[in-house]
Length: 332
Image (tube, rainbow, N blue to C red):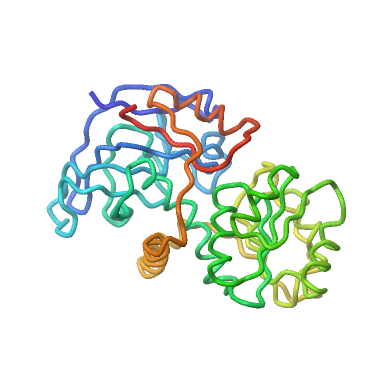
């Protein structure tokens, strides 16, 4: 019988339990996936604490926004997806239809074919990180030569993806990290400059490495007062793109600095771009092409078995010596 990981209240990952579930039947525009692998994401962590951009409408609730699997059944209006093919979910406002299970019924709008030559563990590690980074770096910041982009907490999978994509565009990428041990990893990933946060003046560092130009955009998941620390180093017309709350505290906005530089504040969520079909098509096309050309490649840190989901969350939440996706292999 299929299994699913669910929570019964907003208790965080320690409240997860493994339960049996039924195989649903797809509606007219839906498909059913036999899930081979699914990935952990910080958004799921926040959702399990009711600190995300949407909430569950009832309990028990299943988390998970990123999976890969084999198509088992298709709805009556689905003609372009074949039973037996491997597909991946795209991150979206999934509410109670999470992917941390052996089986998933999902609308065809929120799936895309698995990249050629990838196993399920690799395929499930692609879309959240690279799609999350694509729109801010390429479409919103206009990444290219002469564009300076700040990536705080750059060892995260989305931050690392931003560095890789920024390198592809020719933008100057400035990464921040709390540990000097991460410097080489970030430079190899695409950072041109790395700020190791020892409490020193971040704005001065940015102005120094950009020749007093400042940053044209930030891709910031931190929250709290971190934006205030680089606000004085914004270039005219800068875009501050905030997409997370690692501090679990809303960001303090540097209003005076923004007025002085005519800057923009953009509260960014990938899900809105996935919901718009034209935007989704641009994002998936970019990622497929970059994968085919060998310019992007998912980095998988560690794989856990289905029964090890809670252990995987403990690992992700702890002090890690390596980076990349943490994935559950349902067949392991």
